[in-house]
Length: 256
Ligand code: ZN
Ligand code: FE
Image (cartoon, rainbow, N blue to C red; front, side):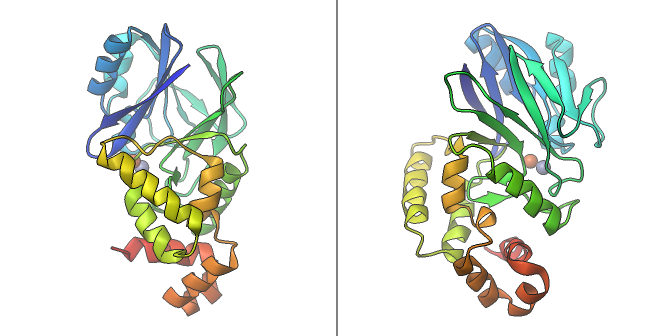
């Protein structure tokens, strides 16, 4: 299986997975990069997986469906370009001979879903849209901090080798904030240096892995005492009232 991040817009990735014949893509906000990649790779589009309703994830669906006849899968609870197969937590989508297990991960949007797939002889794959980013998490547009914390806990509990395929290249700015929260985390310092080197060469920092995110992502680590202490230095009253995760999210919203 070949896994390819197709850059789109300023900082989106449309993930493509293919077996040399058939392909799927995730969150095609734009059809053009997908059509080009299908031609370049010499593969046919079998399916489209969608995580949530935002335009930068859905804008290319109609064009791709018409051009290729691909089946579309998306969240049960969000407005989506029809027709599609609507999925919720516990459902599976079968594509390329693989089973994609659906997880409900509300927070960024109310009906956001993620797709997890185990592949024989390879590390599992997670397509998590705008829920989990490397070093960060999505903004809370439609959900609560409590919902996002639960969603991220579910993703953080997936197997460590799982390849984390996020929909945006936000890593370096997330890591700048993460270092503010946890300046003494040696793994974070090393990961930041590695990601800076990749970006210097215009390479994606993704996919990350669940194991890496558990070590460096403050939003997966808000139960750590050092992180709660940092959150308390930002807003002690907020920490007491809402807890470390909500306080971190609030802090990140206004961090430059
Ligand atoms: Zn979004
Ligand atoms: Fe997005």
